[in-house]
Image (tube, rainbow, N blue to C red):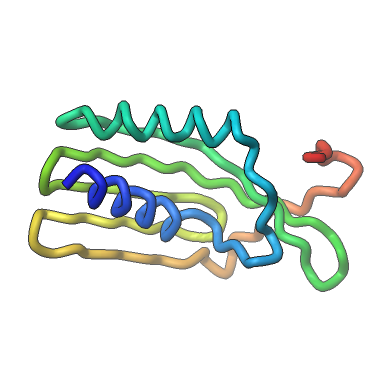
Length: 128
């Protein structure tokens, strides 16, 4: 049951995070992998928990400029059969609700009047 919940949690996070492509795959640092596995084991031992995260991603557009997108994640889990997750940000708003029988997903896209923030390359920190 815990493995299924971990797998479901991982799928939920992936589904509501920014889309990634196979090109984005990089080598995983063994220490980071170990820490994330310990965190997963700890969360797997809890009957209920809440997660809040803030993240940003950069997308390169046709002109070569990087566009920064930010989003916030809130998730509440109550084992074995309750999950609520909400992501809001520059690209849109997503909400997932699981009541033990049915999963509901609500997605709304960015309004046309809202424009993402363009960030010059010189202002971005290197990730390498």
